[in-house]
Every structure is written in C-alpha cells, then in structure tokens.
Length: 136
Length: 130
Image (cartoon, rainbow over all chains, first blue to last red; front, top):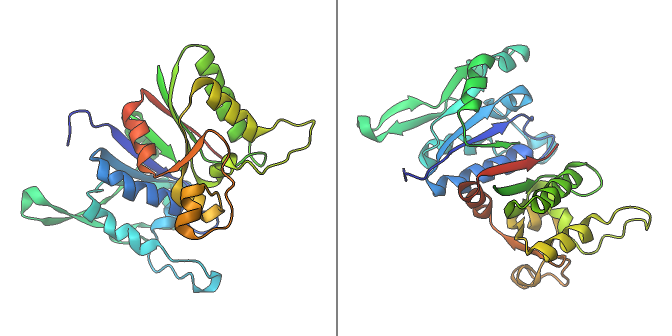
C-alpha cells in the first residue's frame, strides 16, 4: 500500500433495489479498488439488506447484483463492517447474510471472514478513524 | 483548503445540488480551492443543457456552468451514471450511436476513477446527497 494512501470507507444505508444507490455504490468500490487505498465498507440501517443471501429479483425484473459482493475479497476489499443493531432491528442475524471471505496472502492464502459485526459505538469509532466517507 | 465535491442528486427534486453549489461558491469566494466537482447517481442530470426551468426560478444547470467558467472548475459527470440517464457529449454520442448530445458547457464526462482520485488529492471530500 503506498505511503500516501488514505482510509476510504463506503457507507451503505439503503435497501438494494428500491433505489440505485446500492448498486452504484458497489460500482465505485470496484473501480476504487484499483487505487490501492485502505478500503472498508459499512452496512447499516436498511443497507444490511444488501448483504442478505438468497436474493431473487425475477419478480421485479431487475438485475440481481448480490453475487458481486462475493467478489470483493478478490479486489482486496476485506473489511466489511455490519451494524449489529441494524440487523437485530430487522429480525436478521449473521446467518441471513452471505458468507463473504478473503484469502490472506501472508498466511498461505488462508480463507478469512470479511464481515465483522460491530456495535453502534464501535461503528462510530471506526467512522471517526477514516479519511474519506462516501455515503450511499 | 482543497476540496472535492460530490453531487449525488439531480436538480430541483432534491436540495443537494443547491447546497453543493452554494458550498462550492462560498468556498471559492473564501479563497479555497475546488479540485473537482464530481456528479454521480442522478447528479449527472445537473449537466444537461436542455433544462428549461420557469423564468422566476433559479437555473441550476446554467448556474453551475457559469461558476465553472468563472473559476475554471473541473466538473465531471460519471460516465456509467450518465449513460444510464441519457447525458451525452460528442464522444459518447459517437461511441453509442446516439443522434444528439445534451451536455452543458463546462462539464465533461469521465470515469469513477476521477472521484477516487479527487478524494486522494484533496484535503476534504464533501458529499451532497439525500
């Protein structure tokens, strides 16, 4: 990672298909990954629905882009913070989300979990530690 | 201070574009630098010259064009967002076989990398959205 790298965080707050924010946020993340910055993602409020598994969009005639999240590890996006209270408020748990992983080059490509459940207090500290916050 | 401004909403429907304009203008008048204004999501609709708002209302698109000209601003419309929403310059018309263009003076169409680079190069990146 270059010395001048900044900490970029993409905050996702909206459900995946009601508006285009979720999909166009993911497009920024994928393009931004080429810039070798310190990237992390946060999911809170209805944004936690973006990561749910078993999404089926055939009824609404829109592209199901949820498989793209599983490619994030290959783009070296390995820190995905999910607001625990947002999940609980919606009757969701970690089991309802896709199992997102990345491979750690330094540990013989060991597979590691990308999703980290954090409390709102922890999330506030994580946000405070960033250089750039993109809100989607 | 050096800012990059991100505008995520179109004109008139949301205040975000107005707020971004007022912030940008105020920052420039205070002597700050605007590295880039990047228009994303429906924000790309701020860059069509074909809008005709009522005469007693502000003209959001022209206002951006004029500010851009006065301060030589780099005003970039995201290409992927612009293609979805029909914002077209000469290059895009040619590439995608469109029979017209509608980009307003002072704007250019480019990639999302310009947004990330704006974040890297600026002291602050300010997002105006819903």
